[in-house]
Length: 380
Image (cartoon, rainbow, N blue to C red; front, top):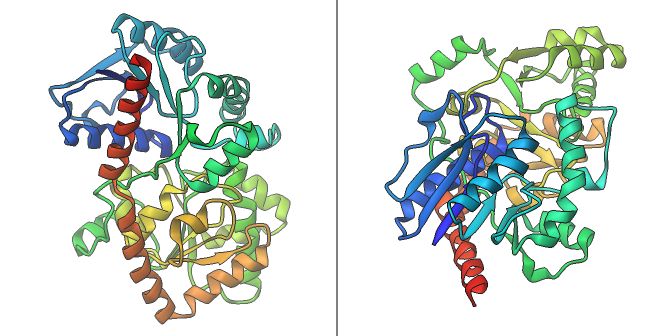
């Protein structure tokens, strides 16, 4: 069987969630050592060394171009030329016109539930418009839709009113380098490299409205006014102009004194940052999965996260939950963890146990079964 895997963005330097999921899937599939041929469709980039290639895997580098052109023009033509038997598109979208069976990973349908043209970057807005246009058509064409949590599976089934057997939950796996770092030299290097404070709350978000930056800032103000914020808030890869605008609107310029920043951090450096955090703050409004929750659990940091969407499903009892729409609730959860060392120890232990349920190998095994099932049905 010839299996095609779309992994357009895995060679870019600043990889994010879906890129990392695709990368780890491909690595794990190589470890399965199955007799199929795999063709990985990518756009070239500076991080080509992130993916060793096994003998039965072929890297297909397609011309650099804007994502819709790459996906709708170059990808289907290359797949047809190679006579691919099953094409897996890994990041919510796929070519509208294919002459082969499609497996589609639909990470989420947030862009279908609400279209906000007033928040987020222009790139995020255009991406959501693109997905909003083509995903409903792709859902009709895909032989199987993979998604990353039971919460998201139910959301997809409810929105599209489709057969339950067409949508499968396959949990994301966690890259093996995410583990608690105890080496003092490694921790010290990260501290200097990213100018980390001695004690910090780690918030990993961006300008996407669902990441709830406003709620985080409001919660910080609550804690500061109550004199209950004993450490700074560490924010990574955040647009500072956007952040300054929000702080100005909140009317508390002194909030900046309690925030420290780091630019984009390579995925391989993140464990040293998680491992030194007092707690990991993840009060998103809506997530289909939440890979940073796995990363934080693996690195032994206590978690405060939302009581909504997929987050309780992923962490179970390994976090303190808050209402992400209520700044007081976020602040109370932060205060509860920071003030209670025994609770911190309990959350660390539960997190390390829970994260064992999320394996890249298991993810690859389940995904491979879908490829084989789709191929068999197409040949029948």
